Length: 343
Ligand code: ACO
Image (cartoon, rainbow, N blue to C red; front, side, top):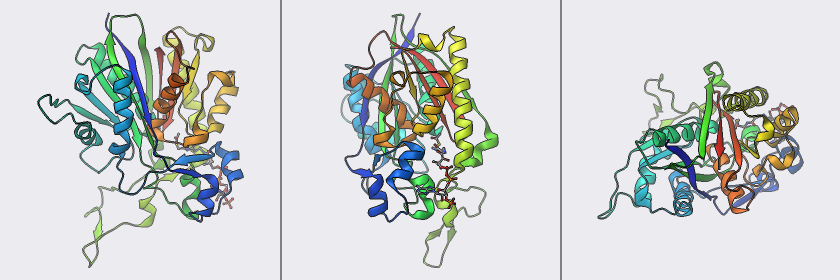
């Protein structure tokens, strides 16, 4: 039987480190290191400079994942790009990534399909299910899946936006999902969504019901009301649903594969908030060493959190061949998902 496994991992974060203290000192946000650490566990995050696109941070992560898989770029036959901060409204970021990877140039140009996934924090797990399905069907052999975000250009870095803007950071994580006859890889996944909560965590900058969707002023410039410019989040609602749905989807995946939590070596939880993950770990009795974390250093990088964490675990030797792992995510939509992978 054809299986789909993760053959390579790669990651990239912009070099500029922004500490909690810098949010107060440099951006003038009325916040403290203590408040942020206590509520979220975040100590610092990375911010990309002006002029950097989300596809730009995706490139080094993808190149590293392809190299780690022992492949050439030309071996990739499908690109899946998960992000909530795409380069533009359209087209999707996948085609920009394809061009920036050099796949459209020269004799060996590869005009592979590019698919964008818009499932926010669950984007990587939705993407993994999609990539594994494509591989298992025999349609594709090596799928490049990237989660990448530039949040820092689109959050309100003032006191008004502090509840949201202190949480997020920029970065990219990528994997290659490849075909194999070996008995390993992505065993299965569980995905879900509840559109009743679509407005509890959203960014409505493109409101297509408005005609025209941006008012144009006398200087020929589009005008956007400030409350549509920035992400909106009801933090307590998100927290409550994240805990519930992440536990449920993990249990679903375990049941589908006849596993208990003790059969799983490592749990890669979406890095939204350290307190959410600690709460879940306590609830179901997971020892901290089985729940890797890097939100302290990167903040919430949305679609990038799980592949960033995977890359780090591989690089540091924590994640080794033969381990059984669970990936679990929850995000805007609300959407959620989990996957079981034999590494
Ligand atoms: N620094 C200082 N004070 C702050 C900050 C800040 N960064 N942010 C908010 N406050 C203030 C508020 O203004 C409020 O002040 P007030 O009482 O004078 O009005 C007070 O702190 C309490 O605000 P709440 O919003 O009620 O704070 P809460 O305890 O709910 O914590 C938080 C906010 C951390 C966002 C929490 O709700 C949470 O973690 N929710 C989960 C959200 C999440 O993880 N989102 C990630 C994106 S979605 C995803 O990835 C799954």
